[in-house]
Amino acid sequence: MIPETTEDTLLLVDPDLDFLEWATKHLAADKLRILRCDNAANAVKVIEKTDVGVVVAAIEMEPFDGMELLVRTLQQSPHTLVILTAGFPTTGQIIEATQRGAHDVLRKESLAFELRSVVESALQTREERRSADRSPAEMPKHDGRVKMIGVSRVLQQVFKLVGRVARSDAPVLIAGESGTGKELVAKAVHEYSPRRQKEMITINCGAIPENLLESELFGHEKGSFTGAIACRAGRFEQADGGTLFLDEIGDMPLSIQVKLLRVLQDGSFSRVGSNATITTDVRIIAATHKNLVEEVAAGRFREDLYYRLNVVEIAIPPLRDRREDIPLLSEFFLQRITKKNGMARILLSAEAINTLQSHNWPGNVRELENTIARACALATSNILLPADIPLASAPGKSPAALSAALDQLINLAPTGENLLAWLAREAAGRVVERSDGDLKEASLLLSLPAAELRKLLKR
Image (cartoon, rainbow, N blue to C red; front, side):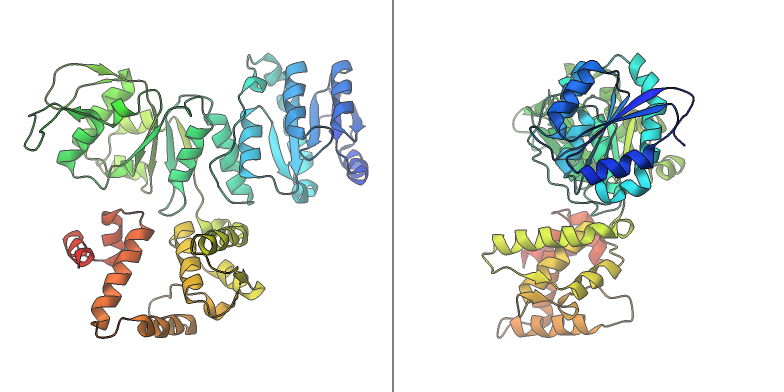
């Protein structure tokens, strides 16, 4: 419950008078004074004259919004805790508000269940914030270029963590299943950080052979190995002043892990074939779909490197754990795909949405996007029904949607072409696209050796 032994002041700011009335009754407690304002300008006047402990404010307000009220509040009273509310807060709003010092960002529809506990948390931590030496209101504003879609509570927690960690240079480890959007989160951390004016360089540690990965990371001198016909800067030099994103760090060979550890320790390295020491200022973000604790126990990943990388961990929830995000994601993919291909608008029926939400999505968001793309390609009308959703089937099952999709694929096959060979090539190409060009991942999904996959793609 809200503490009743310490007198404190709570300010509610919202243009909705009915909400102000409800929240006042909902949060009422002895030793807690509750003030109310229906616009942001009046709220600033109250904060200038009153020692307000906690502010609960709507983002959508006049004459300026809750984000501006957050900045002005913390400039006037740095130890006041601000909780912002909105019907559907966007990714950018959540990250920016958290980065600027908001205690929390809540959806209005969840306030009946969450508001009291969040206010309680804010009141209990106010003394800690008062003694902390920080100035969150001075954080720069961003344009929110990264587009992350989701309204689920678990994903909004990810947005808030991105907002907090982006301010620092601490290494970040992003964990999650394949297809959950780890690179998108890495881009968000970079684009909301002070390093955003510099580039974020990405390298997939599992897609490059061991004998070339060292050169890719650290560069090489001319003649240092067969084929090194010129001096080349590595990714660490290219990312100087910016961010280096090491995707699938769990696939990095042990021999390269040792050299990466040195860079994390003192920021120095040498090019292949050179003894000269180069220093670099790089923020490291790593990602993996593997359980690195298990990899450490198995001797496949260095324990000291794991702790160097895992200063802050961001765990991305699988799509099956945030099914409420599926309608928004599906609509986003529909609009993007139809616009890109110059197609007429396509809508999802309520039954189709139910079908999507009932699927387990082992391939996560990437699989959902792929499914929507196939549905658009095979659509016979501008409204998608359950039968139009080509979901992957469980072993031993062949749903009507899959049968219909196969019939249409057969009809699309070029005349005179070997049907099975054509289907194999098309399937291989789509799986490679779905794997973002990662042939290793694609070969695993297809249960096909990488060499055979390359031959198939060449044909």
